[in-house]
Image 1 (cartoon, rainbow, N blue to C red):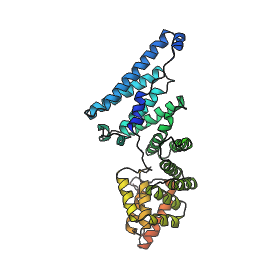
Image 2 (image 1 turned 60 degrees about the vertical axis):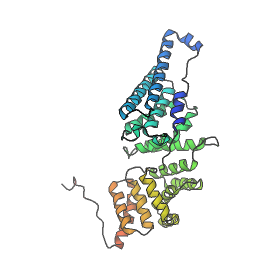
Image 3 (image 1 turned 180 degrees about the horizontal axis):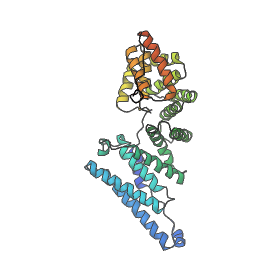
Image 4 (image 1 turned 45 degrees about the vertical axis):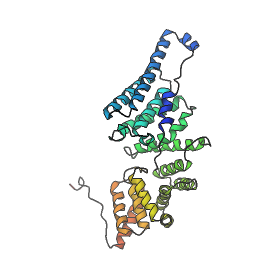
Length: 339
């Protein structure tokens, strides 16, 4: 699945410049002094959080200083959300802050310390998704909802790594992609090819191969690149259309495969769960006649246990290739079961 990057100016800057939702003078008069005090505390919490977020953006700050500023901003956004539970703004800004500093590092003209220290984790991803879900629930018509859909869908997909049998994350990602496609127009600067490709990948992870194949074809017609074409090949193979898959791979040529490997190494493309990438490499190597390399990749995919529904296809490929080498593969023995 191809990653995307969101410019700081379109998320964090928007978060820090978007006006907080203030009660009117008339509302405050009706609500009385207590409500005015809450509003004052809410405004201060948001302002102080924004100041801390901007401090984290300092080029001269150390990793410890950046994390301290981020943690301070997060705590203040949480405080603001408790002061006015129905307000969407703290949730939007909290998600935007964490996403900008931990998951969207390439949008900076420089790399903050949080991008180099292995500081990101699933807890942060879950908090971003949760914050943006609450933001959307409170302001479904806010135009910024469109701006977070793709990033939120990708984060949901990444979280599948820790919960591989939980289909709810994938179903939620699917809804984000579909909503984004429904709302796309000439004024919205997202790549339909990227969204369609990610949609296709999500369909495949859910085992919905017919829909995956259709979405891959739509993505390719929209200008998607080689990684998406390889995704279509994998979907075709898993749908037992191996001859079409192999032909499609060979049509791309060896240079495209080399470029794909480089993109994967640079983390421009990722696969969920861990081990799924071996299916791609195995199928491509097999298509080009590199039997030994294909055998090793098929073994790695099977050993990973990724996507149990597609394991039989991988084993069928492996058995066929091993027969050409007059070999027989045996799965590794589970040491616990062998005791």
